Length: 225
Image (tube, rainbow, N blue to C red):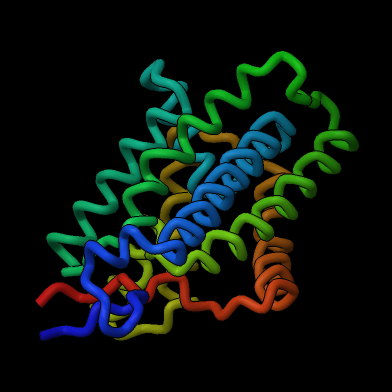
């Protein structure tokens, strides 16, 4: 019988779900998802370009008339299904909640009247960098919950195992492909795209180190047998 990682020894799955540890991790996960939504909202409203995935979601939103959040949910669902059935990667709890929760947070925050919207490069750049910093904090919070990887992380991990390449190379290749698709769909690509590419990696690493979090987002993410 396969060991269920993330569960206390000698406890059943039901006892685990009722435990204080489970719900404390769930609270941390939900905080991380909210911070992700806040980070994406800040970068969207900076109006200086976006990261590859957000640019794709924004382009599809403009083409379809659906909200950014709905598109993000739809893309996330497709990635989960592809990873599960093609790459044989089991989604964790956080994988599903990531798909369900972040998009609605983005839509909700952008509808708040006081949420800052920028129209110049100076203020937009400051706000975008703020979004990157918040996303770094969100990453450390999310990974620290240890309840599974997000849909995009799951895709990168599964594909890296499939093609036998490093996770960094695989993830960069995926994001480059997404960026090209977003470009041809009219996605928002600009200074923010460059800022994200330069700052996101170091920001994420610094956040993980600051909070003492191991870069292992998914003890529950495993290859299906």
